[in-house]
Amino acid sequence: MDKTRHLLIISVITLILIGISYSIAMQQGFANNSLTNATFMELLPEECRVMSISEGVTAGVSFRRDKFGNITDKTYVNLYTKNIYAGANAGFCITAQNIADIPISVDEFVLHVDGNKSAISELIYFSGSVKIYRDNGTYYDVLGTFRNITLSELAGNLTSLTKYRKIDSGEKLVLELNQQLDDGPVKLTGKAGLSYKLVPVFIQYFPRKDDI
Image (spheres, rainbow, N blue to C red):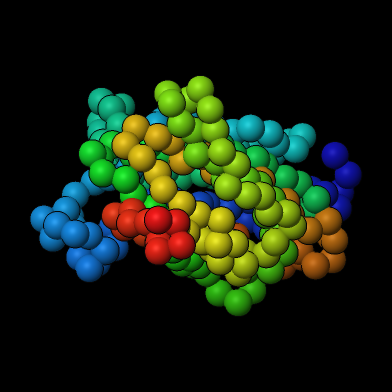
């Protein structure tokens, strides 16, 4: 490993943390108000994984667990990346399933970014796709793809791909997400680590007039 790359690993603080949690929209999003605080989507831990990483990078997927190692929350997952450097990338696959008896859809994705203005948020680019798996995984629909978008554009792009798309009971929503760090060493010098949270807000699905 050359000296420049080693210095970058130190200066970037070696950490990017993504928290993906699920929240339910306000009660006006549901025909039955009693559904407002219910859980409709759950992550499938066995299908949440690292797909690819650059040489020397450490990446993983972790869930909240109790002292015995049992997963206690299937609505929250951390995707972590350590030892990042200029040009490094890491790819993840996140799968969630509709466990309700009603069809739902994503109303919007909300992005929360932690950290100060010197963080590396403007130096990370995202590519990936969103799919819905149907009929016990036999078939899937690709809702859309995105390439080389910035963190500030991520939530809007995901919302545009998923809004008004029906997720029936038992169907899976799959997000494949690759994060690529800018390959300019000078840009990264002195930058701090970054933590951000991506929250999809679900509502009960109703067909639009154009779809009826």
